[in-house]
Length: 227
Image (cartoon, rainbow, N blue to C red; front, side, top):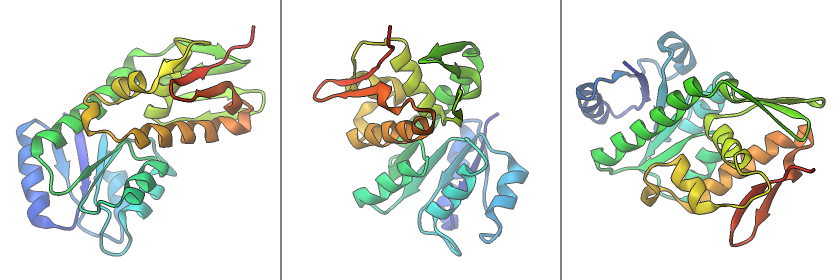
């Protein structure tokens, strides 16, 4: 049974979502003290975190930063705020997806299932190590290491890198990447992929690898392997 921590102060909404997700065999935990979210996060050890943006004490962006500082657990934002900058900010902070309120429950459950399937099936199946430009990529650990250091990637960042690595020196279309990362691309903003690519490049920069992921305008992206 997957454990979900739902950081939400609207108790009517929390109770409704908890009841619906319990019917899908998820174990849903809430927050009792919004000044001690990280303590409750550590106690629950969730497989997925759902966060609202507008919360008591600190907003959801704050807690996303705090969680990302110590964990790569998948994070889904669920918020009534609909400005594009809120969605971009959530992705830049390391969230995996964003659902806007009011929402249809079928959309929420589809997002949750897609994230959990992508993260946990992928991480258990992929244990091999691949090399790229002198760096070692450990798929199962979401790590990439070179003589310049080591970077820990989120599940989405590693999946993007894996997809590009499978077709080195070949262009992978944006549509293919979106389809592979998010099962139903109808609900995904094209900008979400851009944000994830930019985060990946930023982490690769200290390793001297960022320039080896090339943007092919109007076509997609390519991982370059020098022969």
